[in-house]
Amino acid sequence: MKAVIDRFEGEFAVLIVGEDEQHVNVLKKLLPKLSKEGSWLQVEIQNGEVVSAVMDEEETANAKQRIADKLALLRRGDHLKK
Image (cartoon, rainbow, N blue to C red; front, side, top):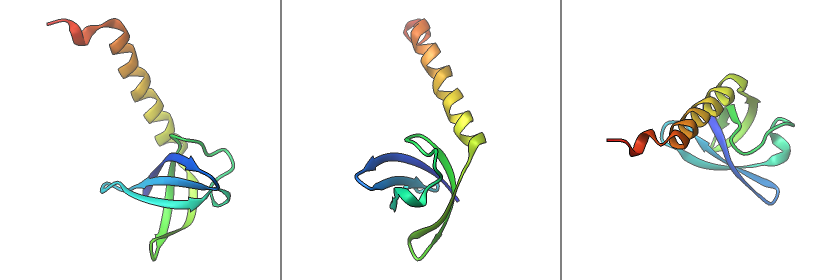
């Protein structure tokens, strides 16, 4: 299942999981070492708890590119032209 790291709160990370965007808290120490806000993960959840998390480099790169593309559109002002 796909999840994105929304934010860190103390020793926990708040993940947004799946299409229904369920919020799940997980100890930071259970995440891959280079995890940061905005990182995408492939997670396995059992009984409401994350039991494994692997970095999804491809999805993270895709998300960064989508954001960069949108930012470029905003900077050009295309959304203001009608």
